[in-house]
Image 1 (cartoon, one colour):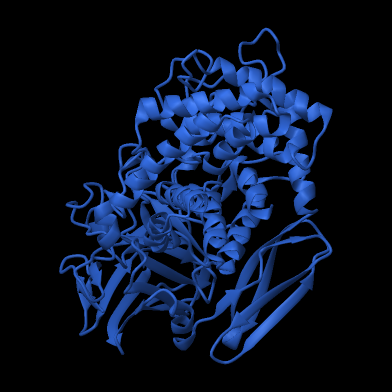
Image 2 (cartoon, one colour; image 1 turned 30 degrees about the vertical axis):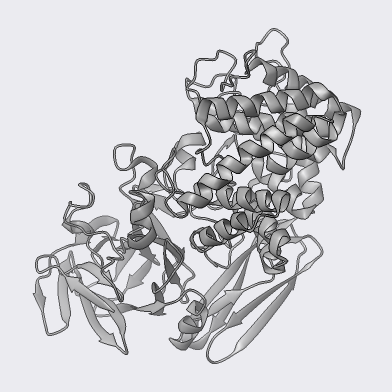
Amino acid sequence: MSYKVSDITGGIISISASDNMNWIINPDRTQYEWVGSKYAWGLGFLSIDGVKHSWDHPSGKTRNTLIYRTGNIKINIKRYTDNGDLVEEYEFMNISGKTVALSDIGIFTPWNDNYPDASTCMTSRCNAHVWAGGSAAWVKAMRMNGHGPHIGMIVTEGAIDSYEILERDKKKGLSNFRGIITMNVPDMKIESGRKYKLSWRIFTHNGGDFDEKVINRGGVIVSAPKYVYEKGETAEITFRSARETKTIRQKITRIGEIRMTYKYSEGRHTWADILAVSGEDKLIEKRADFITARQQMDNPADPRHGAYMVYDNEGDSILSNDFGRSDLDEGRERVGMGIFLAEYYKKNPSAALLESLSRYAAFIRKLQDHNYKTTSNVRRQTKNRGYNYAWVADFWFRMYDITGNKDYARNGYGTMKALFRQFGHNFYCIDYPVTTGLKALGKAGMTAERDTLLSNFRKVGNGFVSRGLDFPHHEVNYEQSIIAPAVQFLCELYLETKEKKYLNGAELMLPALEAFAGGQPSFRMNGIAIRHWDGYWFGKRQTWGDVYPHYWSTITAGAYHYYAIATGKTKYQELAKNIVRNNLCLFFEDGRATCAFVYPKRVNGEKTHFADAYANDQDFALMFYLLVNN
């Protein structure tokens, strides 16, 4: 482990393991013009009796300690190496003559978590998984290709109880820049002459040995067999340290979020966050009923009649005005509601649901012309977007499956022909209907069409295999929802063809996909891939920042599910179930939903950690839930 410190600010400007990768953003405006010297690692801010201060230039130093003074607080930052680890100690001392209240304390830890392009990401960027778990807080930073050495950080004294994100904006990297990750120390009062100390260690790991390395350095690893429980079940959380392994069990007697806390040596504590629901099947049933009863446009005079619409939970109504935002229109990702309900119908058939789906099918046809060119709204004024085709085709194939109406199969095939005609075979599309499409066409007796579709899928798969880890940029330069669909696609194609090259291609991508998800002991975060822009693009408050969970994390579950079928590795099926189960927190007991839970404490200084008011595009999560659990 090596690091470099700025001679001017005293903040760290680079951290490296055994190669030339800088694991943190260089704060000299060369990497990002908006990331200057004040954001160097270890600098930060706090409020003293409600007045905000910062520390960014030392007033003195000793051999390995920098001394800062801000207001009436003296901050000593000591750094040294110990058995290859970088140790940092932050000491906040009250040098006034009275007790002071410290609040909103933030220490910059600008992990190099951003997306210039796939090739750079593979070797020179990291996914930083943050667990602000009090005395046992940690960060597991993973090189984006999934291959070590990686870097980790654990708190050894004091606590980190939340984190925030800074420098997010449309003009600051759009969706390709996660922001300046900033660790929050708990609010406190410090008497005159007293001090508070926070220490952490930064170390290398290889991914699989992270937990043991945390424990060996005095940390605590928290784990559970699952993080979502039904009322009446008994939750089981295990806290493991070098001193003891303790399992806490608690019968679930109420619905909602529950924090299970573990107290250990010298007043330290950490926790696990679990969710209690009335029942997984009950929750899904309530959501299905809500969509058909409350989210379907039922005005025959409206050209969107039959559409499943965005719902504003604050206004308690369908969002009839999309304000010119395509992320709120009646097409695009909203098609996930139709796909979910068509899949749900298979085990829960009813005349009312079929009638709703039939009205929706009539609406979907309005999004397509006679050649199946597919748009996002009935006005047909949006850009030609490839994702629309796959989602609409998947819906058509599922409608054929539940009705036997061959027109639906023809529509699905026509839509896929249009997709390949418009976008070729190099598009890393979410939800290519491989299994559903080939199954529907075969069942409909459309053998020639099935063979043609399979031939097109082979061309796509051959391209994926040829490119390997050289992923092209799509709407985001590099993201989990480029890799996960490719892995799922190749596994499905392998299962159809039994050609090993497709499975080999998926396995090459798998470590990079796995690197997107962390093991935080929370129903919002465990196994959930990092995404940090969808609260802005799909939400009512249009807030940037980490979204946990984001429903597209369930694409990873789909990839794991098909990989488990292809290989017999049941571990991946369990991982898939964990992901889709944790995504149930996006759905509420009254049938409502949220498109995004913006997780950090603050983003750009504004309070967050909230569920957005729009039920928008999250229902794809339930489609994947049904896939994985069937």
